[in-house]
Image: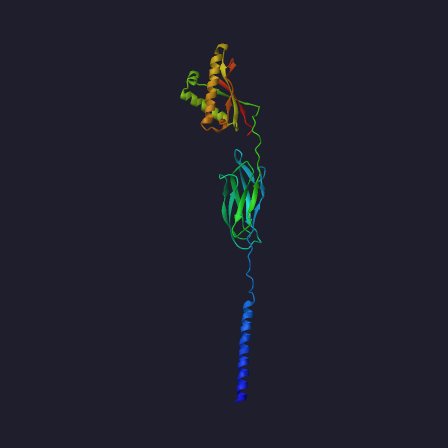
Length: 259
């Protein structure tokens, strides 16, 4: 009997040791860290050129001191995964991007037209999804001083009815405006100063010629108030006359702004 009891104790000890070893192995295996997850880096945006100015071949005037430029935006070829992008600027809400947003796969490029850019210093920013680093295009533009060209331009206005003109006849006034608009528009610049000479056939007609000059100033400056752009910033000189000139001919000198 004693012999069998010893054998049972040995067997029981063996099983307990095996269970303990198995438990230690399980704890050991659980404590081993797993493989680290694969981290995908953010996509990469690229833009060209990085600096724009009016003299850049990518830029053209689209109005008075307003410009239109193009840039190339892309997701680099070594980027991983697709992305979306959007555009913004820090100058004016009037600036437009075409297209203004989109999506890319690695290696794709888009040509973007930026319009209504004012002449000032600022930047355009393109932001991408998935924590992509934004890219910026800098815009550099400085206005030259506004000056009058001292070489004046001359045109003539014919008065179909002198008395009607002086008395404010709508048909005569409208005819004078039509002539003036046509001739000023052809100069392609804004008018800064207007000098009008009324015609005085004889010395006794000088006062009337000055009245014609004064009335001509009123009519010409009214064009600016009617949103005729070349006359919006114009001012007039004093009443002048041309002696020995026909009373129905008004000689107009205009000094133009350099831009």
